[in-house]
Each structure stands twice: as C-alpha cells, then as structure tokens.
Image (cartoon, rainbow, N blue to C red; front, side):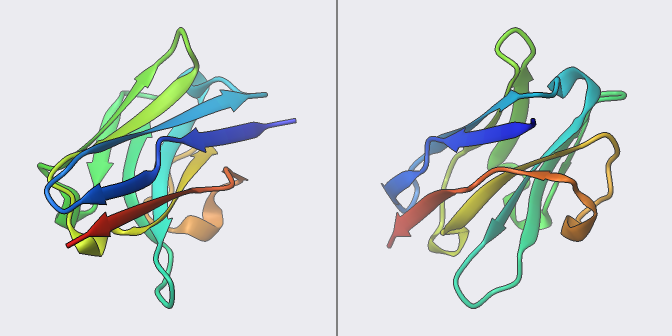
Length: 123
C-alpha cells in the first residue's frame, strides 16, 4: 500500500519560509515523479512543482519560480518543498503527489496523493 505523508505546514508571516516534507512508503521516489499541488478554499487545485525521476527535471508554477524549490532525499525516500518569500496568495492545503509518469499540471492523472498539510500566510 502506498502512503504519502506530508508535514511542515503551519502559520507564517508574509515574507517568511516553510519547508514541506513528504515521506513515502510503498513506493520509491527514485522511480516516481513527485509533485506538490495546492488548493485554497473556493479555488481549483493547482500544480506548484514537480520533480521528474527520469532525469531529475524540475517544474514550477510561474508564480512560485525563484521562491520555491523542490528536492528529494533518496536515502530518506522523502521529497521536500522549500518555500521562501511566502505571500498570502500561497496559503492553501498542499498535497504531495506521485506517479510513475509526469502529467504536467493535470492533477486528475496522478495516482497517489497524500492527505495534505495546511499552509497559512498572514499579511
């Protein structure tokens, strides 16, 4: 059984930083594409960042480029999302996602999802 467990969310002031973690069991991130999606109340789910296992390519939503960084630690089978210079519009539930392929920002194509971790940014 695949499990993705996120942690690291919380309340931060605008301009601050958080690092989200996603620990996996039942799959190896070495063999899977890992992504972070987010969803704010009343808004559609959107892709934030992905790390493609085949060539370690990384992808970012335009609005987070230069502020967020996705990375992985194979020894811990964990993927991270370092979020700097946070803005109120970054507030959302953040979900760790995995699949054997990269499907861009088409969230409905990804098989495995975590339960999410909440990020709140105060202005």
